[in-house]
Amino acid sequence: MNAAIVLCADRIPQFAEPGFKEFAPSLSGMAAAARQAGASGLTIWVLCASAEAADRCKEAVPGEAAKLRADVLFALCPGFFAQPASRPSKAAGPLFSLFSRERPELVLFEDGIRSRELALRLAFDAQAACMTEVRGFERGETLSLLRSSYNANLTAVLELPLPAAERPGVFTVVPGDFPPVSEADEPAAFAPEIRRAELSCGAGAKEAESAAVLLPAKVETGLKSAKRVVICGHGMGGAEKVQSARDLAKAFSASLGGTRPAAIDGWIDHSQLVGISGSFIKPEICIVLGASGARAFAAGVRESGLMIAVNTDETAAIFRMSDAGAVCDCAEFAAELAMLIEANT
Image (cartoon, rainbow, N blue to C red):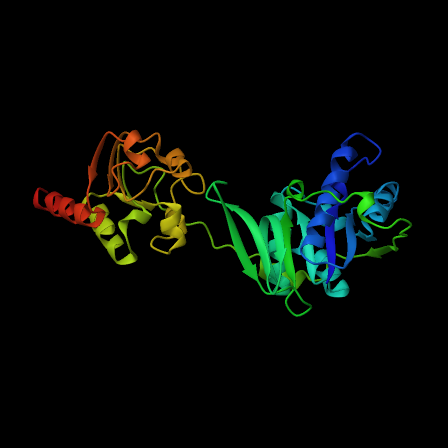
């Protein structure tokens, strides 16, 4: 499998300075990730704003590449760095152009906000598999990706077909989780091939604009300003039982929210997610149905006024942060409360 590591020259502006000491292990960790995924050939793509930037990179990158037995391609694409704070879709064109020309089976970025955006755009354009924040690979008949989940409390293992020319893989990796490649791991005297390419922002512009619609427009749910909120947790027991939570929210003139597990299972829309990954709410009254009280969720409701928790597990952490609670079936509780409210209004 041939692989490419994508670097942005502005990530390492002065290779001779102490900052490069932090960058070298990062590059080594990314190379180790490529090898762990099964790469036999490796090329380091260095995206540069100018020829001068490429020349500065040449003082250090080839030496590190030789240690990693990797070739180097300096890609000159000034427009790519024109608006780093909010990069327009068209600016990603050079990356698409480079991918189309080089055709790697595996592309790795160092994980970060900008690299996640670029990886998603590239994967969308190339119809490739994509995952961010990968912390390990296991190669067998399939390629397994290791990734932190549930606020880093669990490690998720995701299986994908082995990357190939017709189905490449585009991932962002956490370099520190991969053992750096040492010179002792590789035979000596490797001379990397050094190439240079000039890329125009016009290339791939059409495809880049289509990638801009990857994420749906944000939906305003009113959760952040709601005075009353009913929250649906995974403990409700099934998608069919969530209707009782919706009925309660309607009867109580409340907004409906949910926990991450409920959103993952499709019981609620992701725009209704409450917690670290969603909305932080401050309602006067918050009724929590079937949520265990995990830290990521608790952070989103801790500023609620009166909190009422319902769960079948009397030891659930949610009870420790609630003003009142009931140990019973959540759907039955919601249905009964909705009827009481309707009968008295």
